[in-house]
Length: 563
Image 1 (tube, rainbow, N blue to C red):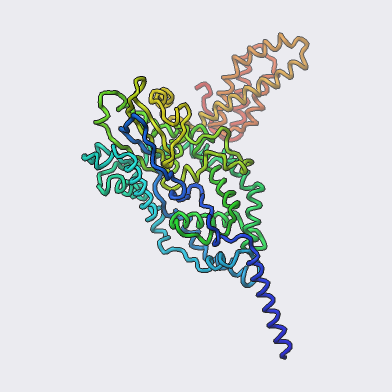
Image 2: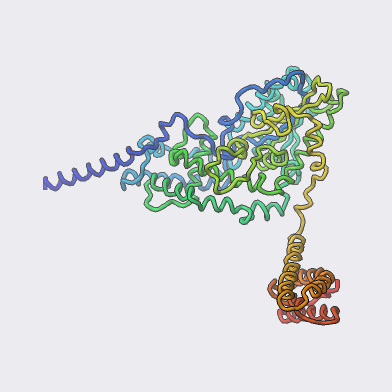
């Protein structure tokens, strides 16, 4: 009996020893990292990326107006993300069991203990979904103070008249945006509160993309357009990520992609909420793996809100137009600027900011972001961690200068860092250059394209397809089967020119209103290339009758094709 008990205890000791060795052998220990990776895409804390040096004084110039586009401060997640966060404690328990009971996993002891002690903050609740976090209040207030200190000529105590005439604050109504306005105002105006302007959801200055159906269908929710994102998350970097994380956490089978993203969300939100504290969930990933997921954030944003689609440039026009028009009011050298606001502050979402940046031409890379170029991510200007963090912003300063050639100058700052804007000398732009650069663009600033019907777009595409269908097979047939191809080709060309528009319109109408399949329309149209007739009017009627017969068989209502 004693021998059995002794053997049993020895076996337990060996097993525990093996478990401890397994997770002590880890060469990855986040808790001991003195310089943890903090770039987390659009959930990056502003404290980690904003400029630290004061804005440079421009010699012989004085600022007369500052125009800013600002993303709201650090917020709580949305409802869906909060619901997944509420389930993470179960995943945490499974990870601990993998290490301590099953003997799998490679988290170091410190990371495992931190994860064991982790509890979701009670403030993370459905009631607080998307509300401004206390850290967001602090970020916005501190941004306001730094702007005030950098441009004392525009703010108290040099300016005694603090009113909506001198300072204009604009945002969409409610929630984190209104709270961000108040926090920004507090820091900027030293605690003085003035009425802000809350705009409706239909206001294009901030929400052009939200009221653009075509953008939603062809850009934001179009999987064909987002193919680079799909290729990336099914590519080698992501496969390796899933495998490494699963092994590190002690799962014999790979955890799914959604679970990895849930852990990353917890990691990056906690990093943004408590900037001086490490999140235990960040220990799940190595630095390289954090970069792999971060690059996915780049790709999504580039194609949804950046240079990945022309619609994004056009939707960024309204705030650009507002900036140009604001500066045009103060461009004359007659002190008219004294009657205009000294500061215009627009506070919106990341989408509004990035569409504006795209229209302005900021953070533009010489090549598009691709799924195959993860290794080149460090060279990209379109880094959502740098340009799209919480409280990210673009500041544009209009100066009056002692310059005999042109007295008006403009300077750009991105996240409080000076921008070397193309066409400008040392980042200081001639106002006339910028005005001429954007004149035509802002004069045609509208969202008419957003409301084009799908039939309008498909009509043009189908006409091209039908023309190609008509011409190419006909050319092959004529060149192969007819002795005098040049003469017949000329005759065929004349016939096409006179008939093609009629039949394209006819068949598009049929397909749109009668659900005629494309292959049916094509089959009837092919008759035009082979049928010999002296009376083309009869030919029209012949094809028309065939279509009507098909439609009749499909029990649909006929209409007059002559309309």
